Amino acid sequence: MRRRWSNTSRSGGGGSSGKFSCPTLKDLEALLHDDLADSPCRVLHRARPAVRAIRSIPSSSSSFSADPLDRRRRRIVLYFTSLGVVRRTFDDCRAVRSVLRSLRVAVDERDVSVDARFRAELQAAFGRRFRHVVLPQVFLSGRCLGGADEIRRLHESGELRALVEGIPSAPTAPCGVCGGVRFVLCATCSGSRKRWWWGSKGGGFRACGECNENGLVRCPDCFPAAV
Image (cartoon, rainbow, N blue to C red; front, side, top):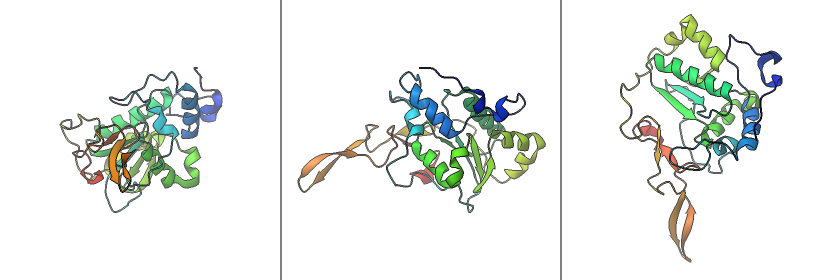
């Protein structure tokens, strides 16, 4: 089933050619809920559609990554989606990633279409305002710089380069472990999301608590603090 965005999902009802624009995460969830059956997207090696990550909130309460609002660490955190289901959102995310990479600084990229825990982090960061949040979102040292429009404005004015001064430089070559994908197979369950356990009444399989819903963990070389 295919659906198209109505004018209500555009800024001001008419759309603007000079600015980035994208639907809210709530609208994205509604679209993906109907298009899940025929979505061509796949997460790395797995057949499970990546859109499931956006539509669900993780049941695990374990900490997966550092708090994006932590002001003690000087770093850039980018929340985005690699899904191309909503073209406008995909283009905005790609544009912001391109801008940040042009600055040649390290960026903690968190793809909400690969891991639902990233979506939960955004929800915790914005609280009640989460329903109005659009992707992408950029955090610098715990402060939200905004979305695509704000990043483009800061970049064109030269303010963004000044803001990121002091951030560690980005690696010059792709990671030798993940190839730049930022995720690897879970070593505990080999991507199956299940692990064997023994108890007083025998053994059995339990859900793996180390990986995300796609059997993946963040690359230990790219994010040593996350493992």
